[in-house]
Length: 187
Image 1 (spheres, rainbow, N blue to C red):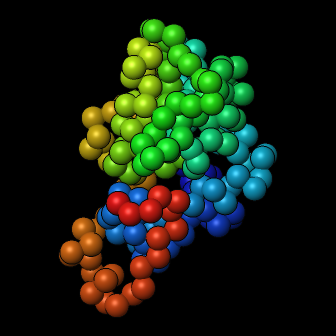
Image 2: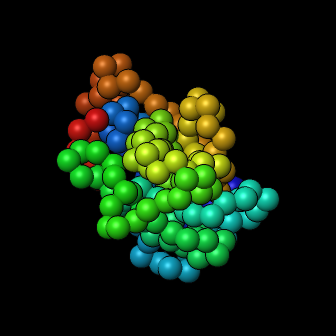
């Protein structure tokens, strides 16, 4: 774990300050995994680590939510020798588009970069449910859930986040400017 944290720091993917997360919660720590995507060898290294954790799980296809996890999902698919798809947001709803399809019973692993509330994981499941696949696992670089989602998450690292409700955020009370580095607008 320490090597991964060092890697995240080295490539400015682990930030400290006052952040508004995609979930709407505030935190003093933000994982900006997109910074890693500038360095294919780093992404490959992290994907190999996650691929080891997925060994023993029978699956056919990787699905990643756009845009944040598309590159990591591709690399995990490459490392596991599996098919790779992505879902994307259209009309504020995740959808499987671009002619992608799944077969009924197809075994799927959903890959994300960082998971805090698992909202995007659930949106991804909703986007593919009409095809009838079986979601057999979830994987990510950073798991910030503390086991609160009920999902079994395979991750390169687990982080115990400091999370605040915006109505009771001590960083807000201190007047520290809040930054929203994520890609999603609103909550």
